Image (cartoon, rainbow, N blue to C red; front, top):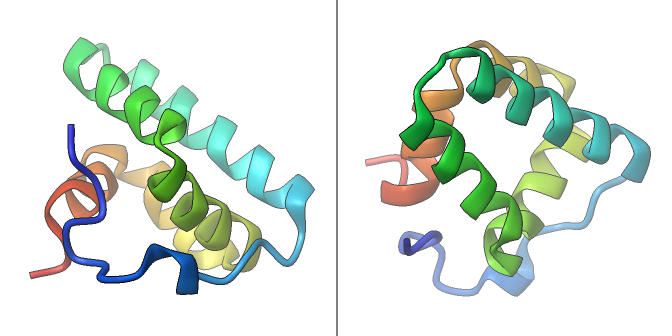
Length: 88
């Protein structure tokens, strides 16, 4: 599964300001995806977490923005869709 089709240079994504917050946000997002009982969503979330480029963005979001973290946790399918297809 291809992530970051919309990011021309993933290395410019900032790192996590607080790495513990990034890890906690990732875990909350994974748990929210598993709670939906949609195996394809859970698989996509795990694939994103394992992809180095996607993980860099996930760390930036979860480690820098409590608001965006909560948005991702509240709607894991939409956030996964953003990762796969971009914001357009």
